[in-house]
Image 1 (tube, rainbow, N blue to C red):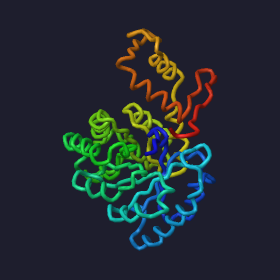
Image 2: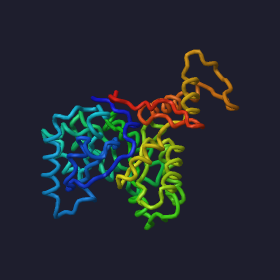
Image 3: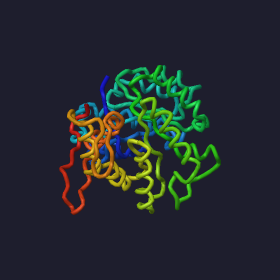
Image 4: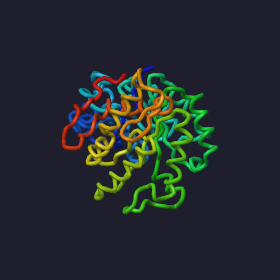
Length: 317
């Protein structure tokens, strides 16, 4: 099975399968800064357009079969397909052309549907990103049980878990206030809970969509909260969000230096750096994640404008 770092996702743009320019995006000719793409056959496609969407998707995948794989610097974004349901996923799973995709996004996955999804997406070469967007998500015990079941049923094929913010807000009859971050809603409980419960089980999680296009400062604020909670990427609904999301995941030089010192084989058990105590035994996981983020997203300029070279990964490990 191929290995792709969840930090490779960055801004994940959703596009309906009916879009005529998807092939240009998949092949990297359009939106060259895009790291990951979800071609949607679910909410973004009307039932009357479904046959057209499936035919278009199959053509895009067929025409993408010769692109170099897992070399994002040259071949465009990672490509995931979001099927409408498990039955559709089973059909797509058997397409020869599906080899051109990197995996599936599994909408509305829960304990009741897990076995059906596991049977539907049986191709071991396809990575999976289940979306957490049902009422069960509000219950920590249910999420702990789901995490254990995901490990058993899908194993290391789970690249990341996607948090479906809008669907979860809909469960409460709410919509995001355009003047506040999602963390100032009941999602301010849900996201930290998921980061704790499922993050502790080893899952990477990605941040919910930010649907306001006229408030880039608020997007930046929400991204900082996403990163503070350990999220590894964020859904984008418009190309203008790609660069700000990817930029937010760049690593500060201070964090990079701390991570390097923590992971140094000669580091003391506890040491002081810039008026903070660093302890490799407890900070090793954080430091490893910082280096992985820097690999995929680069390093922010230091104060005064001096920047380290950007270290974008050229080939996914």
